[in-house]
Image 1 (spheres, rainbow, N blue to C red):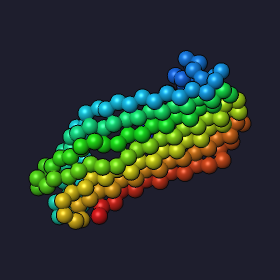
Image 2: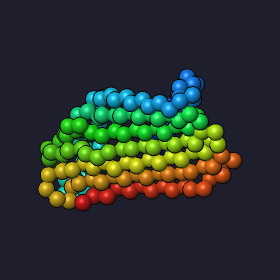
Image 3: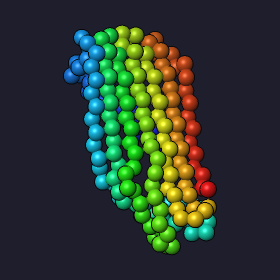
Image 4: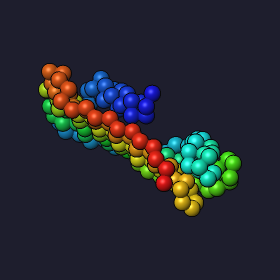
Length: 164
């Protein structure tokens, strides 16, 4: 399952949880929540090790920010942003040092009484190696718009992985 589909499910779960608790329907309100989690992951970088590729072991932390704004009509703007903090590691074959950078952003907007929905997910993540030719660039973009009667008026998906 692609990462934007997982993120989409997370945002909708947050939206439904907010609706179930009834926050925001009589007046506008805003809520922001920040959390930081440790990260440890292995990523295969195709262009590392002179083009043969290698697994890069990364550690650090990921900061997540959730921001929810409710309006009096029952609409919501739910925003999520995640960005790496101090993520770095080494190639498991070469020992080359890498840095993890980037940002992931979700924006979900519901229009309240008409129940239209607009959702956008953008993931730009980079694993940057020393030297040239071993930098992995990952980009995922997903967007849709659904009107109140359930008509899909916009749908776009794009994913790419490139080495530079």
